[in-house]
Length: 144
Image (cartoon, rainbow, N blue to C red):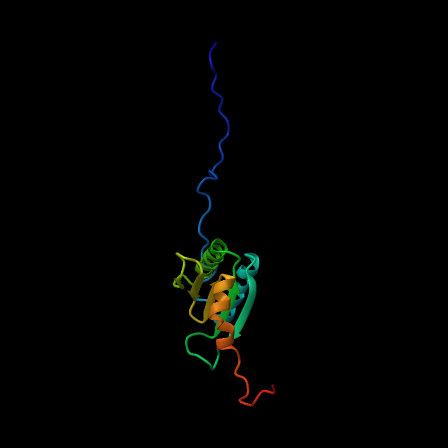
């Protein structure tokens, strides 16, 4: 008995390797508000917890906005940070700097006008950045 080869149609593009990196939406770097919107949307998508946005305008020249959020574990912190970096690069911010990725206790992403801190809950409680950068309280005496 002879085997008969059948000519089956082949797809024009194999699915393997079909995923390409997203191209920047425009050639212009997004402004601080657009970067913040993008970061907050990704943090929400990745189920980051207790996200706080702090306005640094007039307080510091390092950035306009600081975002502090938490992940449930080291793996979650690293995953959240990876996805934020991917979205920033796709939006035209390829030069975002990152610190803390090997350990993922605390990952800092510097996107220029927006700084993102992704913490494990224990590290977040220890460093308490929200208290340090919170709006100044009046210098009056507190009642006991």
